[in-house]
Image 1: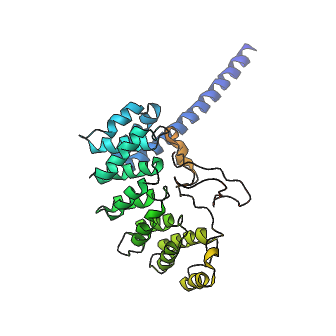
Image 2 (image 1 turned 45 degrees about the vertical axis):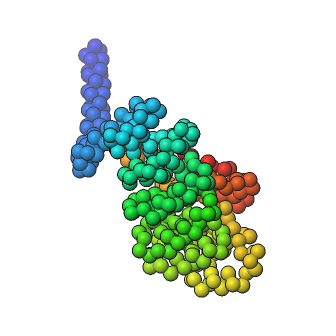
Image 3 (image 1 turned 135 degrees about the vertical axis):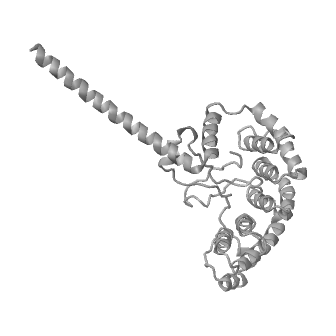
Length: 304
């Protein structure tokens, strides 16, 4: 009987050992896949991934972010500091907004300037749109693109003409014209309408579709990519009725479904901002174009 008990216990132990070995092999295989993938992406990527893990576990303090943002000896530190401040819940402090404005006015480094434009567009006031619109004429394509995206978040009708004039410039980069076509949708007036209709004839489909979506928001109609149909509607519609059925404009944000690999990097699972009303637009009675018309709209602030 004792022998049988001993044999039974031995079998149980062997089964447990085998089960543990399978778990260990699975862990080794998974680790190998992750490491192999990281190696394929290069050593810099490995360092970046582990660096981001460290940042999430022990993120920079507000003081460190502020120190980086004013580190004139290292432009990368400045960029990182401005990004951290501009995407934080405390980034709208007056002192930081003044810093963003200063950089938008005088910064020469395009990466730092782009980060400052993004931060100012989140926390700035309508008058700041004028300052950002000036950067649509920057020599840097990156700065012009940053300005086009930033102007989607601040409402100021005085900059609409600068936006649609640049949008119609076919020598401008396609991605910048796309962002401008999106932003012009918040200004339902004759000049913006005519510019968007003109852009429907540009050669890039992405520009055409961005203009079409803005026309839908602006007028509440969907007449497709046919320029003549839009002009016919415009000429036969009374002036006071042209923009009466408009939908409320929301600045766009990037969103996607999370996949398996997003959860593998568990320390840095992506979080996406939701679309919202630009700074300067009265939110009372507004309806989100992303929502069912019957559902109430909750105002989403421009900040993170």
